[in-house]
Image (cartoon, rainbow, N blue to C red; front, side, top):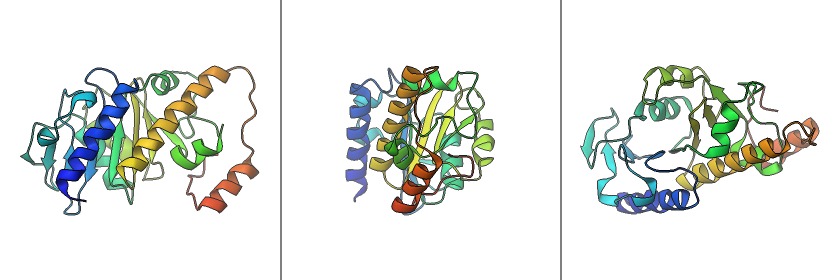
Length: 218
């Protein structure tokens, strides 16, 4: 796909996420890793609902701005996930309501934020890790992400929001949406003793679909 088409794709998915209320105002950001090691990244303080393809930031492999507007302040977050997650070619970071709410709950296991409620939560979002709160744009968040050693494609930033990597932008968006829906289910069912997928059912999904989950992911 040409760079021009990739820019249009970022705008299309960004608009869809915004219009469905998954990231309000100028929150959230999207990046794509290019074949030359550079990136396309949404600009800082830009609404995902009103992106201009020509103004998407183009960075080289070292993070230097080559074209477009100044990129999101969350560059350290994206860089750490690309560096540590093999096969990651796209990253979506949102401030989606239910995922943010879950990130604030005291009982959350940072190694497995959400239980396996549905097959698609396991297949799309996989296991979700929680990292502590950092100021948006704080380079220290990169160390927290790298500390996960690439075991998680889906990470929840405490009091902030989800960040999800995928092999394609479509995959990253779908996984982020599945994470948000699973967070919503978790909040709806909290304290109701819901029936989760059993370890055997999760193992069946892993074997049948060739999934990779961290040791504490189920």
